[in-house]
Amino acid sequence: MSSSTEVRNQIGPLLDRLIIQLDDEGSATQRAYFARIRRSLYRARHDWDLATPIRELSTTSAVGFTFSSDADALIARILEKAGALAQELDQPPLRPH
Image (cartoon, rainbow, N blue to C red; front, side):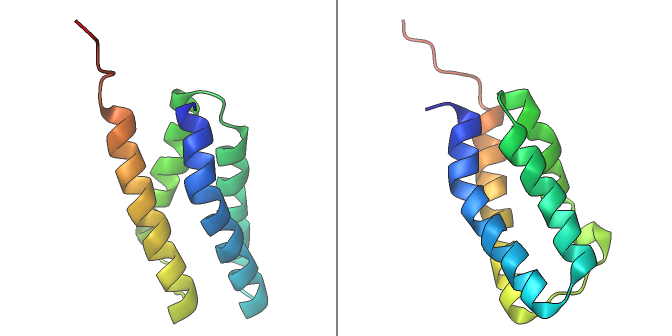
């Protein structure tokens, strides 16, 4: 499985749930922000295409949004997964000898 597919499979459903949560809460600006990240994530076909959505997810706290406890829990889980996946993507591929 390619890295972009793995990232979509791990982060995509969490982003979908977050977007629904933000929509239910009436947080249109935050919803639009994460919907844009989700589109970028789903359009990624190669590892280098993942840099933008992963970077945007990792800088979410710098944007200055305030979230409900439910949305905040989802964001924390997304950031945890994004961080782990970013580390995996930065690792050079193992070469058999």
